[in-house]
Image 1 (cartoon, helix red, strand yellow):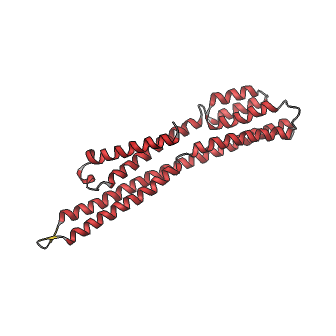
Image 2 (cartoon, helix red, strand yellow):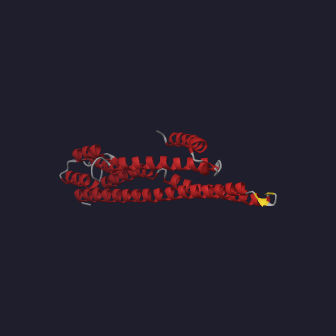
Image 3 (cartoon, rainbow, N blue to C red):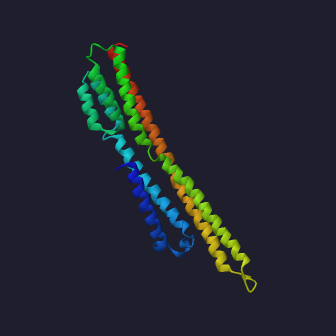
Length: 243
């Protein structure tokens, strides 16, 4: 599914579900938070959707087997000049590391017997193929991370807006007296609205920030693994070419 389609569908589902939950399923004390609570519920659904999408994407990016065991197998094949076997191992492993290494190995396998190219040029071609594949894979790993942090920030402001509206209602209740007595019911509704929106905004912010930091750490680990594996392959090819 395209990213734009995924986001649009998730947004529509979140808004519709948020309104239904607020209007029909929430207990009365939470519904008193006002219609802004529906927006906070929608944001939480968006966060959950993006978290599931990131988790599935990074799980696929790991590949089928352990990256370490896969890499050892590839290095062994490259040392024995079994380039076709290394490419086949990458196809079997799949994932970001395998895709990037496959691009480099495949390019080297195509140019290694080309007598018109110098050893340095063959290494450059291999490095270029790895860089091109890396430029395609890394954005996929980082996709929707900004959405997580953005929703966390917006939810905080959204909750603060609800808090402010609730406090306005609470203070307004103190100015409308019945027989010289403050309308306690309206005062309680205003305070409840403020606190419910505050709690909702903070809950969204906590989930969003934690998820963002977890996934950023995972992506950084992926990037380090990719850089390390690519470097080892390039060094091995340089050694074979006598560079």
